[in-house]
Length: 81
Length: 190
Image (cartoon, rainbow over all chains, first blue to last red; front, side):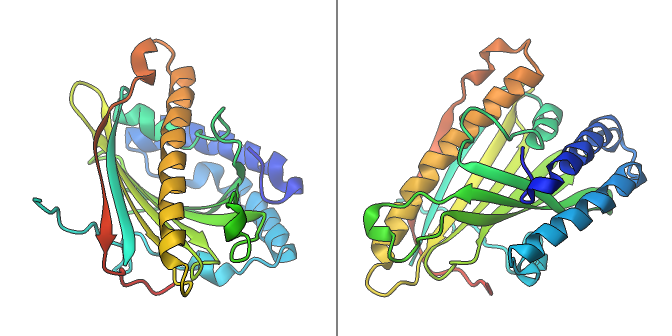
């Protein structure tokens, strides 16, 4: 899959490979230490942020958390009709 | 009134398999509308994995909608929480920008089902605030969402099948329940 910045795609793939093996082999098995991919993630993120800046994407809107907050939508109650 | 929609899908894969496959969903033969995918932030907190990803997708609109929504692509924010202890994966997706024209929010909860399956419970809210056109836009948005959601399930099953090929029957999924209705506008700050 491509990154939003063409020049970041290779870094993204490297990071994704690292993450997927960490998630599968460590995280799901109870090891919560996430330092394994921290280095490559940092480099990849710098690339993405630069690419997004060039595309004038607003970071503020992305940083806002919704899931797990009171802003999260709730399913309406089930109607019995 | 926002339009609300929900359905339930059963994947014939274990929760661990679905959780692993979730990050590898794209690309798949049904995902030509997904243009890019990036991890924006990620951290482990209280034993759960919190991730925020940015996706861009093509924006296919009918001719009449072009005057409101002429962007070639839309940006989507996907938040997720993986709880490996309780085996719950929750994803929460919303569009970034154009939310007055049309806002689509999707929440999916993946939990273990019976005999090694995984059940995905999907909720979606579609809203629009364009004067005089909001009903038409909501109806269009809901139909497009339903179509994309079933494509997403097919694509996800394709990925899971190639990751875990022994379960050849797994492309069969059941749509157990589906409902759709009008609801009061949800309180949302965006």
